[in-house]
Every structure is written in structure tokens, then in C-alpha cells.
Image 1 (cartoon, one colour):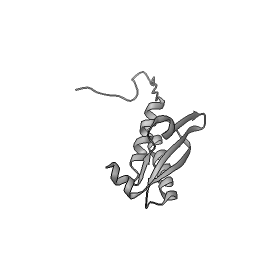
Image 2 (image 1 turned 45 degrees about the horizontal axis):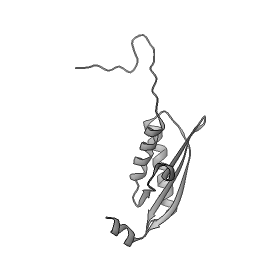
Image 3 (image 1 turned 30 degrees about the vertical axis):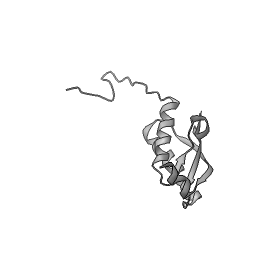
Image 4 (image 1 turned 45 degrees about the vertical axis):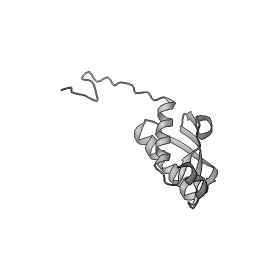
Length: 113
């Protein structure tokens, strides 16, 4: 059985590094938790990340399902992204901009399934 310690006995602390791919995946999962929304496929169109001294800036492009209130969905995305990124990494989220690029009508969504 292995024993894991957070701080080595000599008091030195290790360094944990996160790359942008990990943060991108956390954001994608956070958006997927929200009902009635889907990120635009493709890394360049769907998500842009900027790492600045005051925190992470995220631009997220989504499509909203017909019947969902756009401002409510956008606010839920912002909350989910902020919570998940800050809980899983050392980064603070400075700003999350949500761009709604389209609305999926019932017919379009049913045809994809």
C-alpha cells in the first residue's frame, strides 16, 4: 500500500502546472452540464482562452436549444465555468464571455439525434 503526503517531510513544496488543454477540457465539461446548450464544435470557434495576471479570460461560443431563455443559460454557463475552473485548478476566472451564435429549433435537434 502506498502512502501519499501533501508536503514532503523537509518542508519543500512541489509545483503543479496546468496547460491550456486541461483548462479547455474543464470548461467544455462545465458547459456540457448545462441543459439546453451545446458548444460550437472546433477549438478555435467554440472556445478561446487567455491567461493574464488577474486570471483566466474565456470566450465561449454556444448554440441554445429552442425554448430555453438565453440570458438564463448564459448566466448558468458563466457560473459553472467559474466554479469548475477555480475548484479544479489554481487559476481564478476573471471573465467569461458567452456568445450565442444560434438557436437549434426542435426539428434540427431531432434530426441530429
